[in-house]
Length: 200
Image (spheres, rainbow, N blue to C red):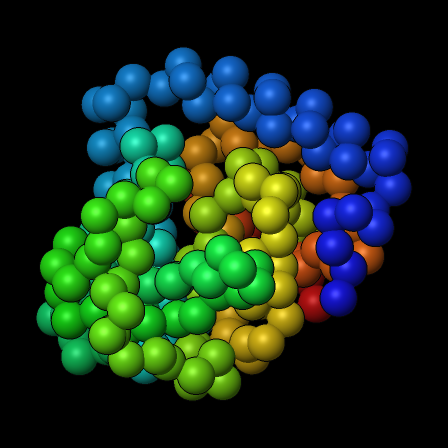
């Protein structure tokens, strides 16, 4: 496992600079724009072949500065798809996917700004997940992603066979995202205006 500590100083600096730049861009987005962007992203996700073919979909519960995927969760409920959300183990730095029955219910109070499935929620084995929608700080058109820096998603994504799609504001997509050996490339990035699919 490649940890943050084993990444080069130049790579860490490049990621830190990009995170700072993206924080400023995200702060400039109004609450109304977040709602509109979330709705548009959900609509694009529902057109993905990977969504059409999926039986099990992994989403995330948003912080105040992340796109809200409620529209996808509700579409899954209408069509009989199983939905799971990430649950973090801060002691070992790992994520689990845990099932939820409906959006916004059966979740913890915010921990580090994030709501998660309750401890008693059933764990979904990674091999059973067909589509993962991934948050992040910044993305590029070839599947590059920079997250918050703890590496939870990179470690988890290496265990799944699922189609992996980042979701982002257009402002969060840049020409090049700095990537290290342990960083996992995504299969696509979905924004309010476009779907960027990485070529195989």
